[in-house]
Length: 484
Image (cartoon, rainbow, N blue to C red; front, side, top):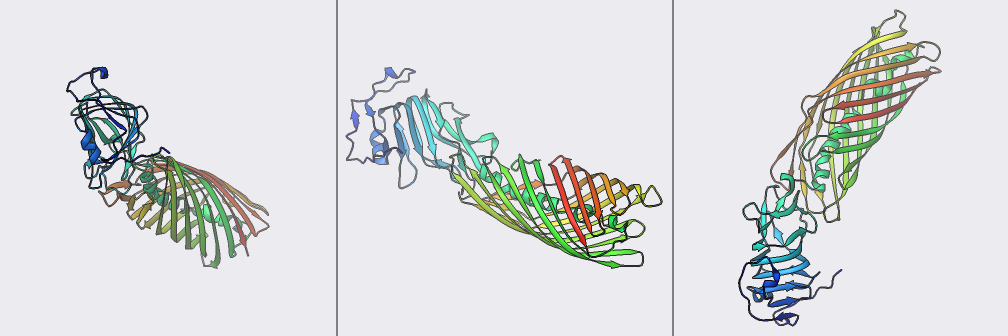
């Protein structure tokens, strides 16, 4: 770290006064008589700044200027200025359109690097501009030590549109959001996608209950299943470029209830899903705890109806690097419910209920997830709205049933899904509301198998791949059910 020396009015010995100044506009620094030479790092208070005003100041290479003013912001005024690899530290309030400023009345030469601290708590909009350098003849090279994070947006420097001699702070790409803002708003996607992958079909959750009926088993059951996969390519201005791996475990117990024309399977279930989202310059983790009830009716004529209600509690956190290389962390927590009804009917192509069959299916799911405010340790607050989800699935299965002591069922499935609602919003530091939508279509395809062993053990697996205009999903399910 550089050693800092603070100078007041009474300690000006490092400043070398060489005579009076004269005014001229030139492209050659040798044409100017440099009245003050500064060869040390300068803590520039307003008292010293007043003495330097209207002077021709030459900085030695690799020095720095640090602006100070206890009563607000400070304008460092020079007649002419030159120096190479000079670091200048400024304080700014781009939200309030004010800050330290460098004013060169005539010529400026050399190269300068601007340092401005990040400030996540500002309520910026990404449309602000702030002039930090004003010059009559700017022959210097100006760079920013790192892009500046103010509120939820990244800012850089450029010549002003009105006068190319002046330098201003502006938001990149018309409002480039910070890594912190992107990670925090992605909690909306994590919540939606996590509940989506957990809202599984009857085959994915319990396997083919009818497979055990082939050998006359219609008993109570205990089951456990695991799943894992990857989601990627979510669209949206702020939440784009999103991908997430996940793993989950669900288990349940149910009771078989016989009826005149079929049977009911009624049970309770619980689960835990772990998510690992990846962000620009960082990553995160998430946990979703679920508990639910289900009631499934299996009619002797091949019709089935599956109803599920679930409650979830979701915990997310992220850790990313900001433009200065500092770690920024944030957390969030939401709760929600999901209701689902699935209906289908199996049509056998053989009257003995073996061989090939067709099974059209449809599923309607409704979900509600409440809102939250994500607090990042850099001061940024991101308010996430609640949202509703209405998901419709229409699909079909082509399968093949092998009877025997250990029956086997294999199948292919394909279908289309549609999010009918899914409107959400978010705010940065209590600022203007920005919309986000999950509404989209996607295709869902898969292959699966069920094997019943010794009438009591049912092993089932399914591999799925979904593609859509908002995200892609690859998932593998593996489950085991014990009948007793």
